[in-house]
Image (cartoon, rainbow, N blue to C red; front, side, top):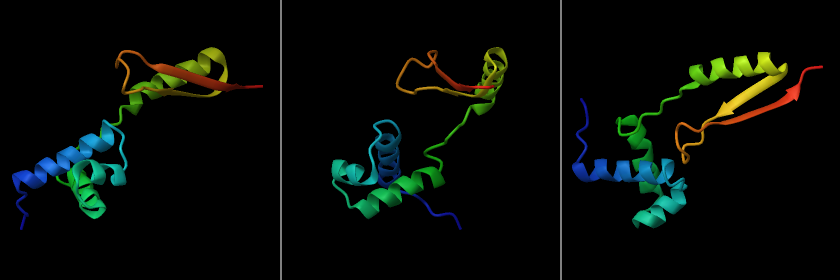
Length: 101
């Protein structure tokens, strides 16, 4: 039997997720910000992913292809591309290091 989530519980889950993922607050800071206990903050946050309020998408295959090209082009042992979410999504920081011998 599926548990029905109240609107207020759902709003709390979403607010906890926003504070964590967008504002980068930890559970203690979230609890303080919302005026709730740390346990309530943790439960709401965990519930946000379990109940579908938060969906995490990793777009690694696109970056993986670019990393492979960088390795080949510059004769690198390894290359990692990291997209920084607070910048314009079209801007990407490219980091490469450790040349092959």
